[in-house]
Length: 360
Image (tube, rainbow, N blue to C red; front, top):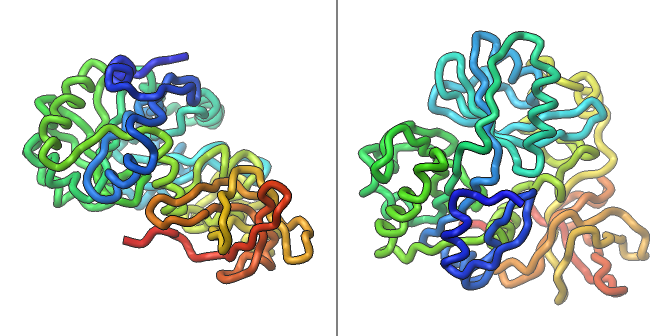
C-alpha cells in the first residue's frame, strides 16, 4: 500500500483508513453524514493526493491530446481546464480525466488513481509525435477544499483573487506561503471550492495553514465516503462504477464531452452509435419506498423482467432518500419512468429523475 504525504496526519486525526486504489486513504473521520453536511454548508478538505498527474509538453502536445481524448481541447486557453475521457477501441472508456492548459505547448492531465499505469501506457502507445511526457503522480499532492465558504475561508492565504477564478479555470500563484501552486476552481462535490496542486514536500505546510485559516469557518477534514455521497448527489460519474472499459460515453450521458468536430480514438464508431441511438442509458433514479440501492443490484420492470443494473447508490444525506444511478434499456430512460430495484428479494419502486439529484 502506498501512503500519501499526509497519511500520518490522517492517522493522528483518528481517521478510519482503508485501502483504495493501492493507497492507504482516510474513508471517514467523524462520520459520513456530518462530513457531507460540512461540505454542503461550510468548507471541508479532502486529501486526494492518490490522483495521477501527467505533464505533456511540446509542439504536438495538443495533437496527442486531441487524438486520445473525446472532448475538443483546442478551445482551451491558458488557465482553463476541461473534463474529458479517453475512449478505447471497443466503444468503452479507458478513463475520465481533466485536461489543464498550463502554457502555450504544455498540458497537465489529471487521471484516476486506479488507472495511472493503464492511462500512462495508453497515452504513451499513441504518442508517435514526439511529445515529452512526464508522470508526476508520485511527486505531487492534491487537496480538494470544497464548500460554499471555501473562497472566504481561503482568501487570506493568497494574493490571487479567489472569487475571480471561474468554474473550470485556474491560476498558478502563491498559496499558504508556497509559490507556484495550482489553484483550480474544480471539484467533485457540487458545492464550489478549489483543488490545490503542490509538491509532496509542501503539502503538510499547506494543510496546516488551510486549517488555521478555515478555523473560524468550521473547516473539517473529509474522507472518501462523503466524497462519494457528495458526487452521487450531483450525478457525477465514478470510474469503475458508472463508467468503465465497456460503457460508451454516449450511453453514460457524456455526449457533451464527445465532440465529433475532430478525429479521435474510435470516433467513427462512436459517431455511428450517436446516429443509430444507444440500447441502454445511464439514468438517475430515486426510490419511492424505503431502501438503499447498491452497486450491482438488478433493475427490473413492473413484471420483474431485468432491464438494467445499479452502478452507484446511497442514502442521500442532503435529501433523506435512497438515490442511485444505473444503466437501463433506453425505453425506460425517460424522466418519471417507473422502475424497480431488487433489494433483498423485494422489488422496491423507484422513478427516473433528472440529474443532479441535489439542487442548491
